[in-house]
Image 1: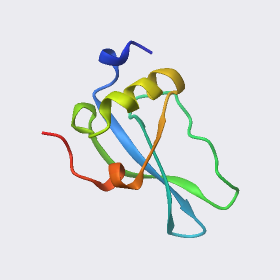
Image 2: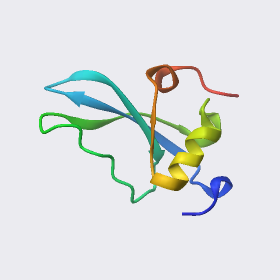
Image 3: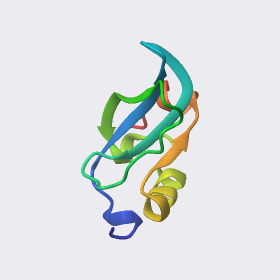
Length: 87
């Protein structure tokens, strides 16, 4: 993957859904066009695409970009996942 400034332009915010359609408090963000795989939390749930946004509009962009460059994805808080975007 390229450096932090070279990360893909669109990121996906993902939420772990447990048993049926019950959302959890576990959130992650990663570039839409990536080969990264999010870890499976348990056998009864799945990752769901919550929303997509331009990477630069994500409020925690700098910290998330560092984690994404290192690990391919970044766990984030619910407040960042559903919060307002940066202009």
